[in-house]
Image 1 (tube, rainbow, N blue to C red):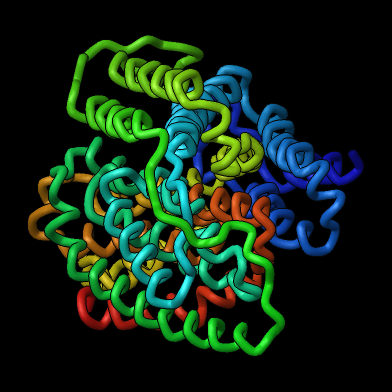
Image 2 (image 1 turned 180 degrees about the vertical axis):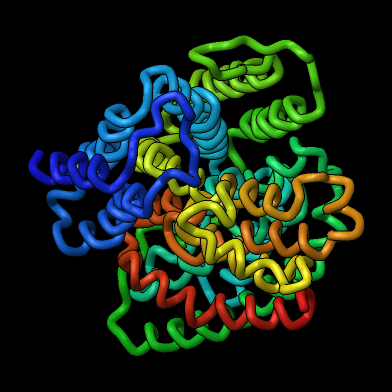
Length: 468
């Protein structure tokens, strides 16, 4: 409580009141970013420094950092602003986000690939390639949940297998979602803003292909090295011996198509009907989408046998962890996004200056890197929106004369969400599922080390080829 009290006092001293003016990013001091930095550092450090405390109390820690923003915010803003801002985060963003992620997790978790194949370098590379391809059509969350169990079983007799799931996050949970608005939330937000459905397919295909091929080749050599290294160690018992592959829970494949259809419907249908709840406009199409997603998840739970889910190693732990941690992230990110939206008038004016040339034209390479670097730690969907609006926000202009800028923003948000565990929601989910299965995943900073070695060179080459 002393830490929370210090945060409240610090922010009250550092920031003047702005009662009736709303959450104006130009009036926010850098101190308002402290809770967001705090939750990031908690996620990065505590699982390694205090694993028992983190495992039992991560939800309370996330709530504590959320309150470290909300309490001082309530002290300096009027009640209406506090309620509307909080409602917008929870009703307009967090709840629909968790419903979508949760429905994909539930439905994909009901598809069981029975049997097992040997996790050789060639097999693993093939599985990663398949997951990367389907991610643009089932979403990165759906593809990750569909492919993670077969990948875990294929490698459960490997003594060194954490690298497999690091590259799995790189490719299946991030880069693979580049080609359609269904693949990753940032592209879906662009679709809602007026970007054509197949625009990413055309303009991101070559950058996505370049990064994918480079990562698959790198993975093949890394996995081959560890595979040969393991052969010199005492063999590890294989809990899932190799058997013929077969598919169970096929109904969930249809339900997965229903999830995709519900999301697509909400973007294509403009009802013109909205309901005001605490100042937040909830559209009819958005509500229908969320009800459909919850219904599809309920059908999946009811229609899928317990044996299939048990054999799939399914549990609610990973999605509960994502829900609790991202509650804290969504709340504490509010002032950070407001400061970014304030542009040159906000605390992050230096970032805005970096993406603009002296003549006022966009610096395409910097749009790619700044969108990407912020997407590595902020949620990549709101980061995409910030830079989308910073580039003018007109979809026709961005798809036309500024097509390279929109491609850079899109690629930066999707690709570089792989730079950390918290850049994209499926990242943390894959980590949680893998650890629950006994894989010793890298720490927060350890994972970023892998990203620095393998991703950054790919992004540097992508910049040189497509964004200069």
